[in-house]
Amino acid sequence: MKLLKRRYLNLVFICGTVLCFSNNLSAIDRNPDKPNVIIIFTDDQGSVDMNIYGAKDLATPHMDSLAKRGVRFTQFYAASAICSPSRVGLMTGRTPQHGGLKHNVPLNSVGMPSSQITIAEELKKAGYTTAHIGKWHLGHSEQTIPNSQGFDYSFGHLVGCIDNYSHFFYWDGPNKHDLWRNGKEVFYNGQFFPDLMVKEAGEFINKNKDNPFFLYFAMNSPHYPYQGSPQWLDHYKKLKYPRNLYAAFLSTMDDRIGQLIKKVEDAGLTKDTIFIFQSDHGASIEVRAHKGGGNSGPHRGAKFSLYEGGLRIPAIISWPGHIPENQVRGQFATGCDWYPTILELCGLSATKHRLDGKSLTPIIKSADTPTAHKTFHWKLGSKLAVRQGKWKMVVTGKKTELYDIPNDLGEKNNLAQKFPEIVTQLLQLNQQYWQSITQREDATGPGKGEHDRTPSSNQ
Image 1 (tube, rainbow, N blue to C red):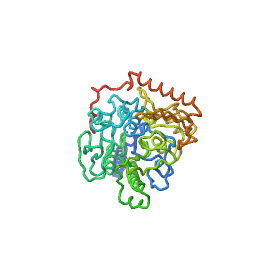
Image 2 (cartoon, rainbow, N blue to C red; image 1 turned 180 degrees about the vertical axis):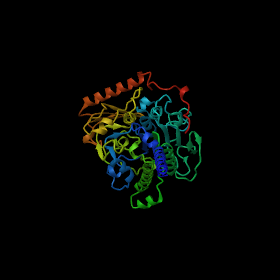
Image 3 (cartoon, rainbow, N blue to C red; image 1 turned 120 degrees about the vertical axis):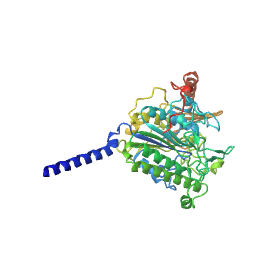
Image 4 (cartoon, rainbow, N blue to C red; image 1 turned 90 degrees about the vertical axis):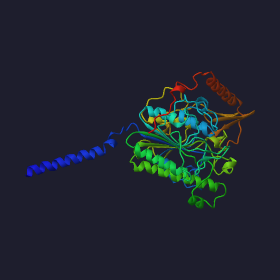
């Protein structure tokens, strides 16, 4: 009888062990070489508009926490000083000129050429489940919406901004409702868009927590309209207008970033998840943005400008337990660089199509590693800029300016006449750059043709 009882207890123990093991099997089986990737892409955030970047009048604890648990960059540049081209740089790893979209996408425009290969497509090919939540602004056609650009799931708006409660685009008419899930219009009138984003992101994370996923969390803030929560509006009531409105919206955004981080923590995925944070460009001084509110700090210019205030932005990468924490990197880096960086950190082969971005992994690992960029070019309408080493040239019409950036962050001392040979050299480099784009018949690289661009199956 005792022998039978002992055998019974052993059987119960074995069954319990197997059950416990099976409940944790998905976490154990998870490939450690394929971390999750979450990109938080903010909109119109000033170059120093985070506490950890020097803002004394802002509360940004959650954005700051990413920097404290990772590496932040102090010489990080957007691919463009406006929304759509900057997103081209992020999504394709190429400058807007190589990516085929040099201006913002207007209503009913096709957008970024569908032959471009996005980072979502690369990760999807490697077994990742992919999601876009938030702003898109890269096209409205069936071939250029997120579901046709490598995203299994998409929730958000297609144009440059929306009212956060009605989800209408009210600027530059006609007024247009703009909220979509997987290419189909959805209505959540009266619900705060950042809250909808966090809810959608949480559901996506929980559904896919046992397998690698990529989440592009593209926020519509602090882009106008400034719609901060009542508690933050009250908190900043003593700040001057319009800084008070901008600050309230920025801290409201920071709260939602904190909620997103907690979704990852609650899923037990902190050490399995790479967080990348970046603003798309500098702060806006448009009339619709109350002519300001954001802060460029010591930098000259703002959104639409090729001076530092339009291009230099906050940027952070965090992956606890895998990369350095609470460290700063001052090397030159760009929004095009995340694409190859993600591929390398995820253990994936380098893409076969041409990139302008350079992997930041060596810089992330060591503060002593020099930038991989020899030269970088920007163009916005008739304006252009070239950066090589410490020199930056800005050309506006017939006016040519040359600045020693490390010693002149405010771009106040034009050295073009003092160093004409540097100006000549940078002009020649820029001419060669444009010739390379014009002459390259394969400007988009080996990619899919239009006939291959059908929406991904929704998950």
